[in-house]
Amino acid sequence: MTGTLLRTPLCDWHSAHGGRMVDFAGWSMPVQYGSIVAEHQATRTAAGLFDVSHMGRLRLDGGGAAAFLDRLLTRKVIGQGPGKIRYSLVCKESGGILDDVLVYHLQDSHVREQRGGLYHLVVVNASNRAKIVGWLKSHLQSSDDVQLADRTLETAMIAVQGPAALRSVEPLVGADIGGLGYYTGTETTICGQPGIASRTGYTGEDGCELIVPAAVAVEVWEKVLAQGKAAGAMAAGLGARDTLRLEAAMPLYGHELNEQINPIQAGLSFAVSLEGREFVGRAALLAAMQNQEQPVRVGLELAGRRAAREHYPVLASGKPISEIASGTFSPTLQKPIAMAYVPPRFAELGTELSVDIRGTVEPARVVKLPFYTRAH
Amino acid sequence: MNPKDLLYAETHEWVRVSQEGGRKVATVGITGFAIEQLTDLVHMVLPKVGAHVSAGGPFGEVESVKAVSDLYSPVDGEVIAVHSDLTSKLESLGGDPYNDGWMIKVALSDEASLKKLMDAAAYEKQCAAEG
Image 1 (cartoon, rainbow over the protein chains, first blue to last red):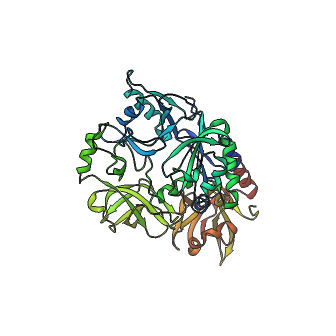
Image 2: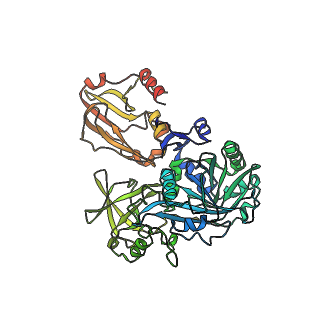
Image 3: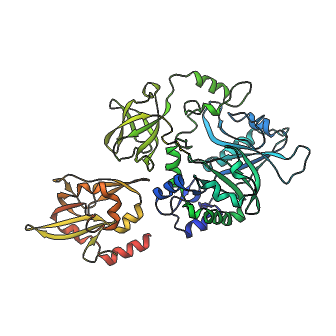
């Protein structure tokens, strides 16, 4: 490896439009174009466009794919209807999280087969793409009727999020995007090219994510921006993506999720389906559901303006009990917010804790998650 | 853009040297370039009057949504004035960083540190290389 960064099909566009590029999971990605707060506010009030092409897109074909995935994911895949998308975890035998993913079940519009050309698409975190590909391959048996293909480098993925997102995308997409139910997706034409549209996102706003061939990424990006311009649509970078997802209390791998944390303590039991199925980590997660001792994820709100940031010590009666997983100054709430794992006896809403912010101890209170819920 | 009568540190602080009540005083703030790089300022922590600062050492911090940055003193001396309500008007800091954006005034204990600072032209060159 020479150490050069991977580049999404939109990389040059970002640089040409003021994008401040950084290394994120081995990709050159824009943190911000101008003000993170402006990009954040635009997403909450109009629309933000996010280049999420760095995320892994793994396609699984074959009659055995659903059963194969079902054995490796915490959420049922067998029986997940066509068009449905499910948030799920990939766990180790110990119950520790390898990644959080979205599983799409889609109809291939170009295939005329007896089976109807259904396939699965697993969208994974950029930082875990190699790990998950390796994990899937290591569990694949030659007798499995499964073909796995990594479609990341030949495609781009664009998230359009906010109250004006869907109407900015509508004229460019063949399918009725406004009619797409939450967490459903479909193959469709996007700017006349074959792609996938889904009613998904990572900001707490309504919106969609578009997967398109790499060659048309810039065209789609610019057309969506042009379509949404009057409403206030803006390109938004990773900085705003982080403040948005934090306000919505969405976990970020490497912060709220890692191989030493299980989905139960992370507050993700909704993505764990234990009954009547077997999957890697099931026994550990069954035990985790009974475990009253394990630290659990909580939300913290601080007074003042100083943010509690990753790794800062969390104190109870002045004694360290944990550390911050993620934290920022919330542009929407205008106060510092953070997430941390604390022993259950400190997890009750209203519990008064404190955070050591670079040598000064500031009070913090346990609050309900999410910090922000959209009104519309 | 950078006033010619000021001196500049490579850490993007500016210094205005004046004579006040028989001693040399340095007024210190951060440059327009620094403010533009930081973006999204939310908080600032400044020292108390009477605090001692050393050239190259931190005298406070400025916090943006994304990160915290130390403010470095370009001079040695004692803090004799602090612009304490600056933290409540950070949005306007970018409008006038060199006057209304002043942060601390320092009674110089040693003028040697001034010689290590840059003039506007040299500072402009540094920013061009960085930006």
